[in-house]
Length: 199
Image (cartoon, rainbow, N blue to C red; front, side, top):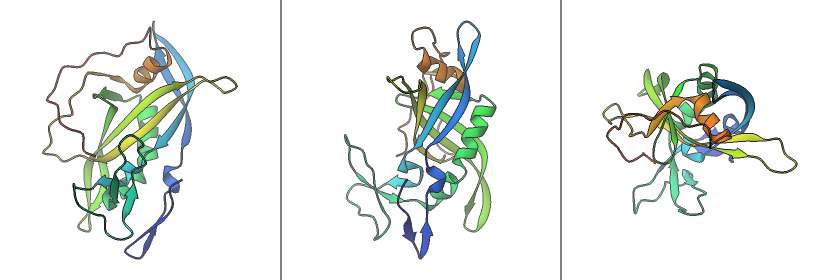
């Protein structure tokens, strides 16, 4: 669990981002379904944003990225933090509705619309982007399962173009392609204009 932070005299805690387990129905060819264990983990990108080059986070607001390959400092982001409190609920809706996801260059991307957040003291509805990767965990002595890592989650700027994708399909089909990668191939999506993923 991430350590609490004190921001403007208020303690921010992160119990809502502890790893969770869910039973998810995945899709396998030909027209087969299987319920499997899926373990979800959450990155600190869900409540922080990248600092512009050369800038330093204000005292008490710095967030260590934790990336071994590309270590860099980040800064606490209030809106991402508020939205992250409903992230598990959004994921549960994704599972229950077997919603459509699209695959970007590095992550599986899911967009939830009409998610509530506060801006300038007013409640507004935003589109919430969730970037995640999934992999199979099949180790001796452990139950075979899938691990989904939520790499980032943030509100989309309405002026940004659609995130470029390589294929699209249901969440269950995406997970099925990780459970049995040889037989399962998600549907290819039409190419769209690519943009750099916000950090």
